[in-house]
Length: 354
Image (tube, rainbow, N blue to C red; front, side, top):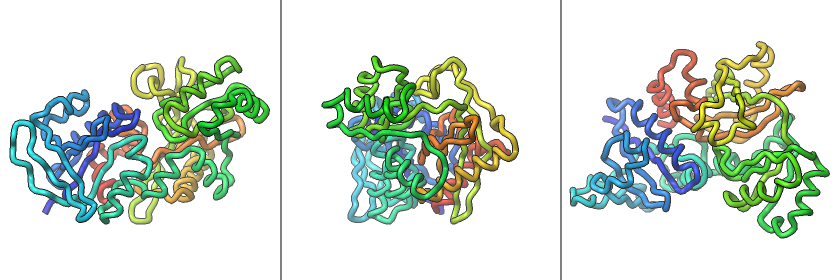
């Protein structure tokens, strides 16, 4: 009998569009002979729908306008069942069902931050990726730095954490950061991904605008010393207590200041080297760092761990517990470099949960 896999896409975060692209790639490569796929789209305002239309409409964002293909969904914490209402064209809903596993192809808040993981954990339904606590800690960059700093000796950038009340004395916040590490510095939301809300600040005149931009995404922000180095990423995979680290990738930013949202998903300004241009010793070092961080944060199934490669070695940047799965995303590229197809990678991920 086929396992029932509920694939969630969309969501309420600022990374909604990235989720659609990742979900489209997952849905067009998943093995339908092994799994019964239930596609659940979440609109920007948080409404859940069963979608039985064309996968291409998920990629383009047109899925939620196809009302004939949408059936409202209610999830019951009482029994872990998905209950379906009739679609706009009056089609009889499919029977209520309990998924064998949930694949939340959701990036950012309300998907990657432990909230969705906790919802299904209450009902005992396995979720692809990290658990509730690990997801929440990894989503918050300040908490991540605290745990990695306490559990490992891996270098990290100096940083200042600020909360919304700090906006009331912007000059004091700026002076704290200038005194601790000076310019240039990065200002970023603590709980957002895909570089949304991130700014590189080169002088005092741009500090306040960068802080406002970051606070627009989250009520807590991180201000970090800018690290001079190339960006190196490592894919980590875990299945039933066994771990694998892929050969690292190196991001070539081209003309971009940093690996921002546009560079990642829109423009063709950046490129990459796979494997990264590292010596054998450097490659082993960064793989060991990635695995140590993955374990310290109690991660499961998959994560992408990002570093800066400097003249003095590697500096930990951040971890992504639901890394991008778009056609140009680095996690699947790193995992597939040994000859594993995209479909086989999805099988491995689901097998790790089931």
